[in-house]
Image 1 (cartoon, rainbow, N blue to C red):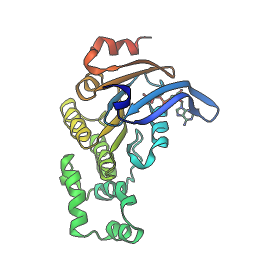
Image 2: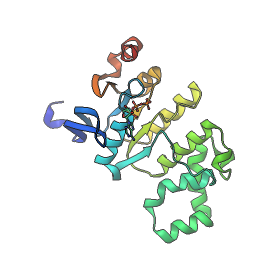
Image 3: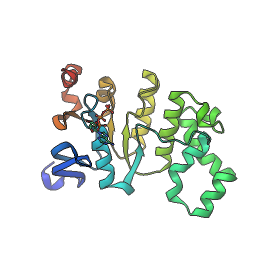
Length: 225
Ligand SMILES: Nc1ncnc2c1ncn2[C@@H]1O[C@H](COP(=O)(O)OP(=O)(O)OP(=O)(O)O)[C@@H](O)[C@H]1O
């Protein structure tokens, strides 16, 4: 494929400074992610993964299903309500209020289908403060899925799940989006599920390669002191 045939950039930074207020995390970031790509973001704690994800979201907010690390679920509300909240933008205020207080069968079914795909069918009307860490994490993933947006941006979305469940849910979630950038620490999962791996260290991109060309040892080197 020559440059003129490549899909248009979905995200693009050229010499961008990214940070928090006056604190700079990336002094001069160069990065392009194209539509259709699935990208794993790896790097030691504090290397800038969450900072970069937030900046990607700001570039294309209306296209992005967002699954942040801190989850921000409403603990006193049920799995149903928390997942439904991912879709608030799709409907009008009145319909949303009714759905949250007294959902129709169709509204219940559409959320139940997402919950079921995440193994949460039994917990649909359990409040989030009564879930395990992994169940809460799956609820946050459900809320992102219910946005029905094509680009997944997720920050360690399966870190509380066991290896097998994490792999299955991540694969299923990626299948439901046409592009994705996902921050994670699990190197094997990154190689198994994503086409491209970007490695960060101290606010710099120190690795950017197709996952098929990488080994676990290559990724381990990102974490050396
Ligand atoms: N809200 C904030 N205000 C100020 N500085 C912040 C804020 N959030 C993160 N930082 C700083 O930005 C830098 C990068 O943090 P970031 O959360 O992006 O790293 P990370 O790679 O996602 O880490 P982790 O793997 O621990 O989640 C760190 O030095 C951190 O202290």
